[in-house]
Length: 261
Image (cartoon, rainbow, N blue to C red; front, top):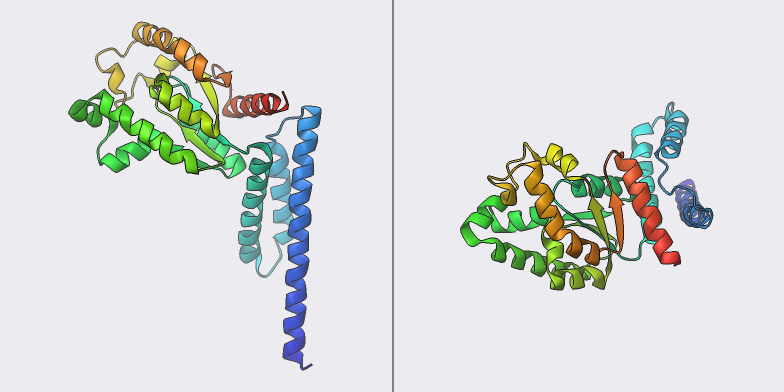
C-alpha cells in the first residue's frame, strides 16, 4: 500500500467513526427525550442548548477549518432536533384558534426548536391565488376561500411531522376537522378578547374585522366560534401573559401527556 492509498483508507476509517458517533448521538437524544417524558421534565431547554453551543464554539475557536466544522455541526444539531421531533410526534401538529392568538408565533418557535416544517395555510392559499386574503374574500367570497382551506388540508394528509397553522375559520367546518385529525393532533390556542384586540388592532389583513375592529365585536365572534373550536381540539393552551417558550412547553407537555393516556 502506497502513502496515497493509506491516507484514503484512514479517511474512510474517519468516516466510519463519524457514522458510529452520529448513531450514538441520535440514540442518546432518544434516551434524553424518553427520560424527560418519564419524569415530566421540560422538553424544551434553550438554556441548555445555548451552553452546548458555547462549548462547541470554545472547542472550535482555534481550529484552522472552524467555519467548515461549524457548518457541519449546525447540520448535526438541526438533524438532532428532527430526531427529537420524530421521537415526540409521529403526527402533524395542527394549530387552530381565533385570529391573533399566536398561531404563527408558536409555529415559528416550534419549527426552530424541533426543525419541523411549517405550513401557514393562509399564506399558501394567498400565494397560490396570487392575491391577498382580503382580496380573495372580496372577489370570490368566503365560501370559495373555505373550499381552498379544505382542499389544502386534504393535500396535507400525505405530510407527517409538520406544523400546520390554520386560519381562524378553518376549524368551523366539520370536514376540515375530520381532515386535521386523520394524521394530526389539533391544538387550540386561545386568549382573552382584550389581548387579541391589542394584537390585531393595527392589522390590515383581517377581512372579518373590516368595520368591526373593536374588542366587543371580537368577544362576540369568539363566543360564536367557541363551541366548535373546543369540539375540534385535542388540547387547549391559553396564551395570555405567557412567553412563547412557556406556551410551547405547555403545548408539548399536554401532547405527551395525552399520548401516555
